[in-house]
Picture 1: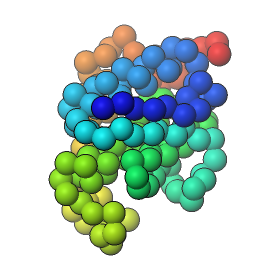
Picture 2 (picture 1 turned 180 degrees about the vertical axis):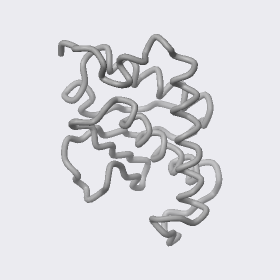
Picture 3 (picture 1 turned 60 degrees about the vertical axis):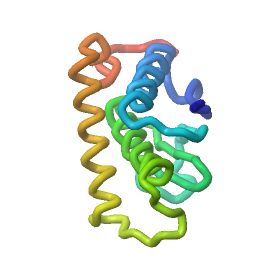
Picture 4 (picture 1 turned 120 degrees about the vertical axis):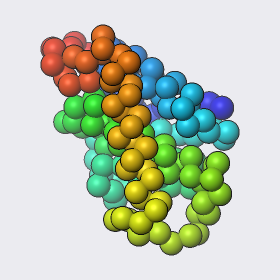
Length: 138
């Protein structure tokens, strides 16, 4: 399975890109997807979204401008969890689900929280990058 990253170098330093790629590898180990996906890092809320969006077929959008890396990873893992629900758990694209609460959204919220906390705990060397605590040259 391949993950295509779009606009990542426009929004992040080299060190941040490495951390994000490591997180994606972690997600793939923990919540493996079978189909290729595109992850679009965007500086605007387009398509209309809060901080992230999953769209068929296999497109993730993550708002990245002016956000800490840890917050970007939380959004990424939330949308990844939705993609996992579609690819592995049988959720259909045409199923109507509430955007607040309900089993589908609650699953993504819980899983993304677990993924981010676990990654942070197991990657202590990345803490400064995760919290934008050092000046990083682009």
